[in-house]
Image: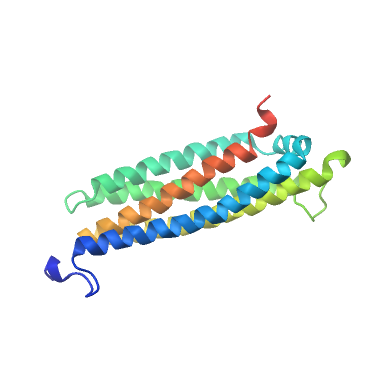
Length: 213
């Protein structure tokens, strides 16, 4: 099919189609910013109300797993960026290998997060399920862990969506890379980078406050 006809009638050209797709991804990311931004705003409100409890609760998070997951996501973003740069018919295998590496790192992140959740369950740090903490700080600590579980579980869900998206893009790239697939990969990379940036904010808010001193 000629490139000039490889787009729907509502688009002037293939470039117009690709720019529209990218704009759609930016609009979607903007809605996600509002979602996570609301969570973070609530965090700051209650952290101001219970500073000692939030600091104490933060010290009960696993900084090693948190730091490892941060390094994992930064590396995965680098691989995805390299995949976008390497996209072509001649280098499609390299592009697919880079995307596969990012997928493996994304799944590793989820596995480590699951291990961390299981440790917190054994330590009775899940609000509403036999929560056990210093009595003087219980209310604030429970609020901290409510934010922690809601925000990180929501982020993990976005990670799984991103992994599935990268898997689809890797398959399409391997079969028949085209300009349309390049645009899709670019939009998928934007989503992946956004999810990684969200984690950097969560890492700073969740794992570091009680250890900053």
